Image 1 (spheres, rainbow, N blue to C red):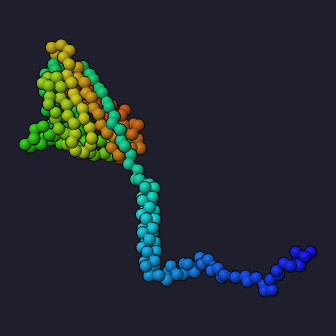
Image 2: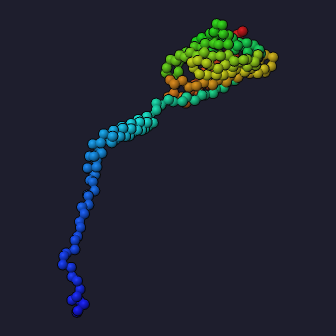
Image 3: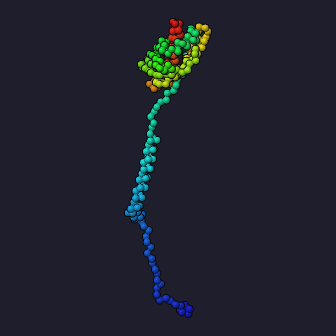
Length: 220
């Protein structure tokens, strides 16, 4: 008890110090200060413009890439072959076919064939026929390719109705030969709805022309 009684007891209260801690700046005040700053305002403006431009370009690119492309049907080539033995030597049949201006005599769907003046390897054809309920007229310019005398004539169009073909002559004796026609063509767009019927139609035309040619050689 004596030790307790002799202990020194402070007569004054202990001093307690309080320090004012600043409050963190609110988001709105930070935004206000940032926008109020001319440099920051310029930075935000340029950044916003750049981002807007990027978004616009991205949208335009997406719109262009997603826009539907116009439909362009691709026309396939059709191949036709016809052959027949005719009562004429191969040399005679070859000579007649080599004179292309004679074609309308046994191919009535050819209204005219004209050799180009100054260019004997070029011929202009005019096709007139009635097919699938339509009166059809086509022009095309064809280049006569290097022939094999008494054996082969061939051509390809370079303008207009797309086609190519050949006529071959195979001797079958002193007074007859086999004539074989190979004709390839691209279906004209006007006949796209009936493209499936074009091959048999052209086969009939070529076959009919060959039959008339066989009759024609007997008259010369």
